[in-house]
Structure formats: C-alpha cells, structure tokens
Length: 254
Ligand SMILES: Nc1ncnc2c1ncn2[C@@H]1O[C@H](COP(=O)(O)OP(=O)(O)OP(=O)(O)O)[C@@H](O)[C@H]1O
Image 1: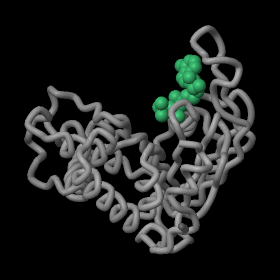
Image 2: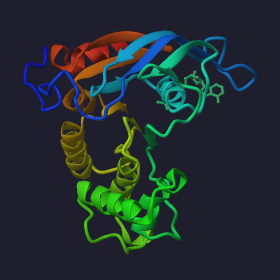
Image 3: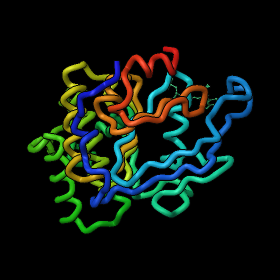
Image 4: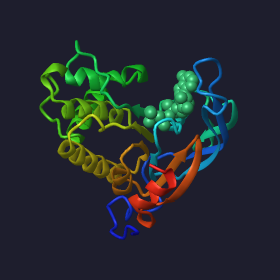
C-alpha cells in the first residue's frame, strides 16, 4: 500500500526562506581500509545526492549500510577519498560552524548545568555574553525546557537529556542539522513527542535536516524525502508520501 496521508513535513513549502543550507554530494566515496574493515566494500559510494535548502531528508538502511559513515562525512569528521561535498556552494573541508550533529546518546557534561551544556556549543563562536544567554534561553524554550537551565544533567529524564542535546545544537543556529538516531534510546511516547517537536522547529526555522533512523515508519512520518541506503549505495530516493513501509522493507530486504 502506498502512503497517502500528508504529514506536516511533506506539505511544507519547497522553497526555503529560512537559514537552511543546501548540501551536494558529488561522486563521494569513502572506503575503510585495514584489518578492521569488513572487506573491500566497507564504506560508501560513489554517492550523488542533493539536499535542498530547508529540506527534511530521512536516511534509512540496515545495519552496516553506511548511514553513520555518511553522517560522519557530512559532519566533516571524515573526508571523502573521492568526490566532494558542498555546503551551499562551498566545498566542505572539515567540521563547519553552520552544521551540527545530534547523536543517539546525549553527550552532556555532568558537571555543567543544563544552560551550561547548551551554551557550550557557543563558546567557540566568541559571542558577547548577552547574546549567548539569549540564545541559550531561546533554545531551551524551543525544546520545552524553559525553567530547567539551572538543573544538573543527572536530574533529567532520558527524553529531557536528549532535548538538551537538541537545544545545544539549535543554539548554534545551524544551517544544517544532522541527527544520528537521536530518539532511538527513548520510549515510544517520548520519541513521538520529540519527533513532533523537531518537526515544529524545522517548520518554523527552515533548517535543512538530515535525519538517520532505523525506524522506517518514523522516516516516512518525519521526512519530506527518504533515501534508503544498502551496501553503501542509494537503493531508493523518493518523496516520503510516495512510498510505504512495505516498499522500503522490500527494497532493503529487511
Ligand atoms: N572504523 C571502521 N573501520 C572499518 N570498517 C568500518 C568502520 N566503521 C564502519 N565500517 C564498515 O563500513 C560499513 C558501513 O558502516 P556504518 O557504521 O556506516 O553503517 P551503519 O548503517 O551506520 O550501521 P549501524 O546501523 O549498525 O550503525 C560497514 O560494513 C562497517 O563494518
């Protein structure tokens, strides 16, 4: 059955007038070498992919298909061995202030307050203190944590910790938000409400989002577009409203 219901992401305007940056992968390859690699094919590419400014793209694929490798390349942690990645029109040469990554487990500093954790991402930006404080307050408000700034991380639930991670990313006002299975450790209810909040934030700010998930239904709910990776290559690239979970399962053989 083909999915027919439009989710908010799918009905969003196609042209972004927010701060989202486009992303272009031009014949990008990365192959792991050495004994740790699982054969000559470990890695991804060559991949050609264009993510439009303001687009919400979900990437799915079975374990080992290359999702984390792709995100590491997009985050600038790995450099392509072949091809190039463009952020807007500029070749990506490493981690970039316009892009930020939220990972599966909230990597927060236990000795800092919630506000201190959110402000951490701003410290390298040399912003005046009032600007740092207002961005921190604003980011906490966006993720529903107004009033939590003085709390310690150990006083928070798993879902709240992941909200802090998201706030830390949002405070940097990224053009491109990369998310690596950010809600997978959470219970279904928390995951659903956080996913919907993320959609609301994306809708308002028109950030470009690349969201990696194992959950095929989550990908179709959140994404305007879904890319399915298999053995390091794109096996399917479609508008989310034009594919079903079953089609994704068949494509990925999962
Ligand atoms: N550091 C590494 N050294 C060698 N091979 C690696 C390394 N990291 C990943 N690989 C291999 O590259 C391929 C892609 O791995 P990757 O971690 O990107 O997949 P994934 O889709 O993110 O998997 P998962 O869903 O399990 O996290 C796999 O064959 C994996 O074994």
